[in-house]
Length: 620
Image 1 (cartoon, rainbow, N blue to C red):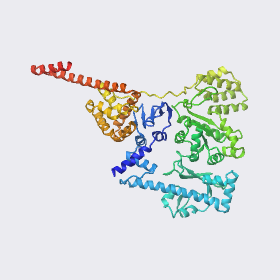
Image 2 (image 1 turned 120 degrees about the vertical axis):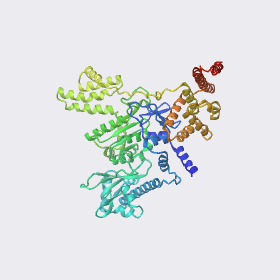
Image 3 (image 1 turned 180 degrees about the vertical axis):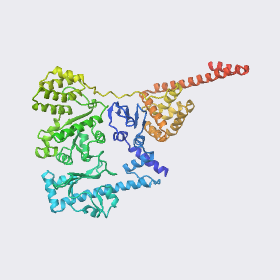
């Protein structure tokens, strides 16, 4: 049993990617060989949380938290080791040996049944739309045809129709699934009078798939004028969380990676229309506002964090653009500047910026779906190609109001609106150029405007990650040397193998009880692991229930990084120096004890004489 469980755990560890695991919860930005972000375990404004993908570990240089992918999930979700293992086994499709965890197996089975039920429902809705020839299906097909939705698009996105019957879907699925499964999947509702009825009726159905392609929820669009609300969406469930899922991502993720950019739209049909006409890298929220979880999800697919906002161009759309832009900027706080100007002659890496926000705003006043259908996808691509940065879009929106200015007071009010935007520009030369342009358009004094901007200017430039060492209590030179010696086992590019190091670092060098335990564990593990990464993983697992030793291991990894790049000669010298320090400290401690014994033995001349001789021998 234990061997079978160990095999599954080993398979899970092989599948785990620390970057993938952490980036689901933390927005990370690459800097050198590490990735940095704001620590999820304590509040901070400057990133001190680091992920090392080569070693498969994370650590916070501020609060001291650290570990591997499994310990990260344990800490952030407040779960035990086996609870995390069960979750991961379910995610990767591994069967855990029976350990009495019936409730976990039951939950997994329930989720699987819910996903299967949603898939069957999606197929039922689509088949009903395409094959039934009733008046309601013909009306729905006309609505879709008028929106440019062809049969091929219906097939591709599994668009369907829920009939007006109260139990049309339920009558089909009740024979294959329990009522509990259908109700929890959001497909049926319990009625006081007639029992269970379909949740969606007389609505066009847009199935929602997670990023793995599984059907997990539905969006339902009203087709009758008196129907309310216009859109009815599935509620959150065991398999669906609208705050963490983006519509269209399953179809868009490869294009997002290829384009290194994502287009964020407002509605299902905007995404369907764009993707069907070749603009593949677009997604939308599922009937909810954009969340920080959505942004974390997107940041995993576009390293440049290039996000295009494509909403309606009316006043409501502009408010949505502003609201979502602020949320995106907030999510990237502390990771660097938001890109604020296009470099015409400077060759700068995308790593310079934490995020790049652009706005697609065709002048015709149409939403993306309507614009693509009426003007064409090629024209839309041109607007993508020339989409202004958020700052330019916002300034231009303010400057458009100048046409309605009639008095100096109204002009002053307009200047008040544009000053906060100019204050956000970090580069003073660029800021000066923008001030000059705005002053020309508004026909005001450039120097006066610049003075106002800089007088109230906010320092927006994000500081670089603070990589100062974790603050620890004062330790003796001997303890420090002992930690150093343990840390040499964890140097990734070690010129010596584990056996050679172990021969140079015997157990009798360690006096600290905690370090003795860690050294003993390392002695056992180096017989079974093949490299430093595996050793670190096994160390974290061995002390999974001991947070203090977890922090010690994290600290040792940090020490080991400072020893990287040494050749064999220097590495040997490093070990010898720390051993010499320990020997000296041990000798000093022994002399100290002898002196104290000598002072206490003054009344016993024979004993005092013997201690004098011991001190003399120590000095020699």
